[in-house]
Image (tube, rainbow, N blue to C red; front, top):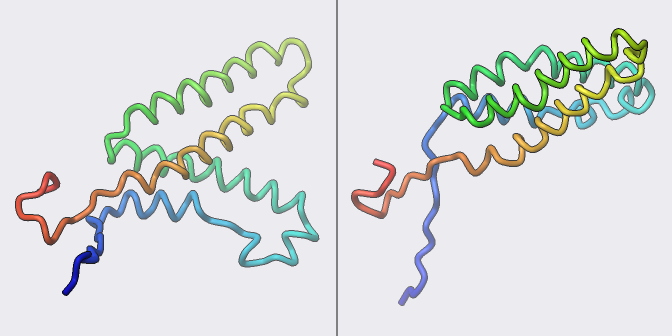
Length: 134
């Protein structure tokens, strides 16, 4: 007699979520631990370059997933401070020091986004007729 039935949760396929997870969970140090340790500056610059290059794809996927709050947050926490730093601190001469601050904001934004993406998956309830996700 079985009291507890194990229900395997399956999720609806979503290529935009899959691509977001693939981009945000990419880690070079797992694939190439030696060069990552030896050439830390070059790997850091390549990581920053990859983050900036992948931004349009991430924004497009957020748009297709209808996550407008995340798009507005991107504008508020990354675009506006970057424009502000370029206009205000370009006159003062602190540009070389504070140019990395918007990149720090981008890193925090991508980290929080990476943590919340697994909660966006819609489960398929195969044992429940007429579920909410149909």
